[in-house]
Amino acid sequence: MTGEEIRPSRLHWWWLVVASAALVSAGLVAILLGAVDLDARAVILSIADRIPFVDVDSGLNNRQEAILWELRMPRVVLGGVVGAMLAVAGGSYQGSFRNPLADPYLLGAAAGAGLGATIAFAYGSGLPSGPIDTLPLLAFIGGVGGVAATYAIGYSVKAGRTPVTLILAGVAVAAFLTAVQTYLQQRNAETLREVYGWILGRLSTVGWGEVWLVLPYVIVSTVVILLGARRLDVLSVGDDEAVTLGVDPSRVRLVMVLAATLGTAAVVAVSGLIGFVGIIVPHAVRIVFGSSYRVVLPLSVLFGATFLILADLLARTVASPAEIPIGVVTAFVGAPFFALVLRSSRGLGS
Amino acid sequence: MNRALSLDAVGVRFNGSRILDSVDVEIARGEWLGIIGPNGAGKTTLLRAITGAVEFEGSIEISGTRTSAMKRRDLARSVALVPQHPVLPSGMRVVDYVLLGRTPHVHAVTGPSIHDLDVVAAILDALTLTAFMERDVTTLSGGELQRAVIARALAQESPILLLDEPTTALDVGKQQEVLELVDQLRRDRTLTVVSAMHDLTIAAQFPDRLVMLAQGEVVAEGDGRKVLDPALIRTHYSANVKILDDGSGGIVVVPLRSHQPINDSKN
Image (cartoon, rainbow over all chains, first blue to last red; front, side):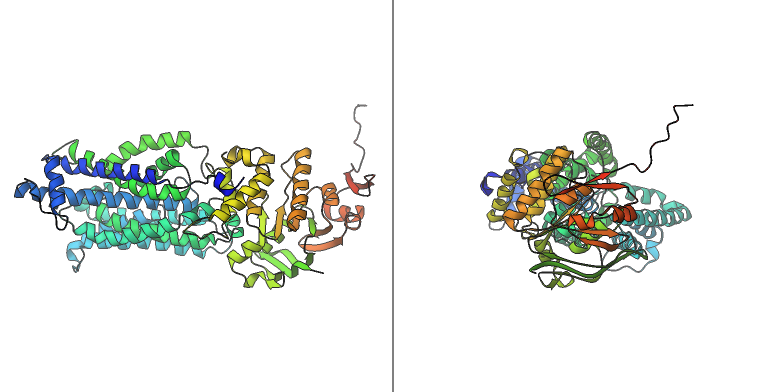
């Protein structure tokens, strides 16, 4: 037998084509549907008109153009960016900790961002304003700070340090930050509704500001995570065996968690705590396409974006003109799905 | 002596207690060294020190180079380990599992070359794993799994192969099959083999030389007849054994019950 006769797991190009087609379709549908339905042909012409050197008349009036370019489009793009980041970060966490239940909020990112957001809602008006709004800034700082505290505690454990030590440190940090957040929320009951809405997640946005704010973080984080996919496959045989294969597991874990955390904190800052995307998307990809991270991570980017765009479409159309918090939609779809994942998985942590 | 591996005053501490204490061992190229000793003697720790998975005092040299001065990847190209309890990722196929052994040779981003795949294909052939290569590693039987783990270690193409109690979970037929395979591979590929071993008769029959560890120290070293001494085994294993000739120049170690059972059927 020669090397040509063996077929190791790999990412087939047509999987990428299928996933990209799903993403583009979901994006188009989400752009067309809403309180005001837009005409598909006109929308496509309007998009073509924005391509350099192409000049066509879409037939949309100024109000429709504004709805398309300043409301619908940025929201759909933001949904895609947030979904892609949460899904690929979830995959990165699951690989780094060899734990199928790991999600991007595992190490205190959610609790920290929640505390930051609560401070912004409660005391934001009294704080000096800078180039970035107080809310995303404090949520971002809170998210990164939560994970940094978890790492500081996890690393202070000298003997018998394992990935589980880090997860337990995250439990302690999350509990502490949530306690502080709850205390502040009780002291400022008038912000309860806003904080609660933020925790459930929302993509309501006007214009492109949020997209440009988070995009650099998401691109850098995603590229770093995708480049580390092969390393995560090595980590799946355990830290000791990874060492004998020439890989430093702590370093891989640090880089992958750092990248996932930065990206997650950035998207959480503009979207709130949208749950379940980071767990269900990588798992669904794993079940359908295989468990190698070289397959799971790139496809999670595309399907994560698709999933969140569709979830947001449901969130803003089902009870129109009212909006359901997007976190409610992802959990409503995600929880039953997750139960199925649990049923079909052959034991956790393996 | 053409040294493949030499350990000089190697010590390992964990939480203040000594697991290994000034171990000196030299292993020649192509030699098979068996490490025996009671549970907790430090056998696994010794192997882990050689792979760089635990910090140690003293020095470990591979062909004259200190392992502490080697890059992780270079060390992995020199030493491969077959662990006693390998972690099996569910959903991973045998071919992908064996290909992981190429990690120290494969570029982290661009992936395996056709040469890497050729190496894996040849090893799957040699270990009669071709029929299983599409199977999920978690579905293999004990003997198949042990072959897959050895295949992964061989894919590293390291001249030194460490085996941590490679036959513990296998029936007697599979034990012999796996150890004969290791011996065959050692001869074909001029491997230096170091194996921690539980079964003293097997330790007497396969390795060229034995080292007995007890409480982290080397208490005996030499050929099977010298190290497998009933008095030594009584001292360090608290076991009562008899050494018998196997009729073809080798020895077997037979455990004996120290006392006759108390016959209380009279009551």
